[in-house]
Length: 444
Ligand code: SF4
Image (cartoon, rainbow, N blue to C red; front, side, top):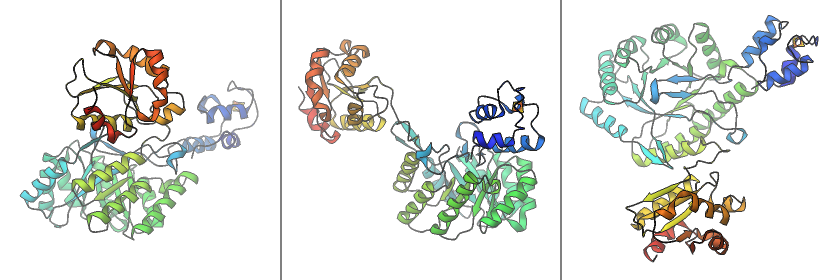
């Protein structure tokens, strides 16, 4: 948790000497808290206070990166318990488990299925992030073969999971430049895994029976020189996990307890796609930074990814599309013109229904600051004057040979005024997007 001005003030010399350029130590503390000054401006601050202040400025939950380049998965660095307080920064990673007991053909089939798990929703691509190869065969050579095959057939991030550090040492040679997560460290075999993580500059997941052990082991690992740690708590059931994950997040954020200030991962333990989905979504909601799942079916993955997308959307910033003219289908100068707001979900719902109608249509998106139709109307961001202005500035007048515009049914009240200020004839469309196909097919 960030220090307040008063917290910082307590650590300053309180002599009000003005050497920092501020009239008092308190004024300087307030400026520091607001990031408007830097600590080095005070030449009198003690080494002890300096260390405390610098350590307090570190993020309460360590940022851990798996992979590299565009596809890299970043976890942690969160600053709040609840998204409405600010927002969550790094969406929980979704990993898929692959056992190294699969045959070459089964493996190729599973990886191909996973590679196809990519969807588009409200203009954003959503897909799982990582493949976790587990050394269930306990055979070093088999593990290496499977890791090689997976690494060469998928660009996704990788996690190598084995109790045998020597097996990972061999397999990781097939992951050059991929920076995989190493899973398998635990109290009795920490040193070999720490060495492996250091040699490969890779993040390390440590398995712990409970939070007390997690705090001890992360501390040991950090002191051994590995900074990027992921906590993997033992399988004690969903309810216990949520309790522990919440406690860890709260302790890291509110008490600045560094040994628990690391991303937490979980493997789903339930069988059956429905139960596994419910478990995985619960982990997304409650502080898990990396969730390993087994199911690779589309009707499992899509709702999981949608839930993640929604939880990690910035609650203070609606998802928006660019306010401009969109063409749906092969439009001509006689195509209908519909206006709506630039709230992503509104736009994509309207565009989807227009596509389903098979009536090529122009959509003119007004800049409503990402608000939906009724909200924007109530906030005066979707008024007759704004729509008229958008119609004029968008250039739609030069693209069609008529001046007839369709407005959403919920703002039918705008029709008279809009005709007056725009010179366009207004048709009132349906209230619900589901009525668009019938409406457009009858539009003349
Ligand atoms: Fe206080 Fe340091 Fe500024 Fe002097 S230089 S007023 S001691 S904060």
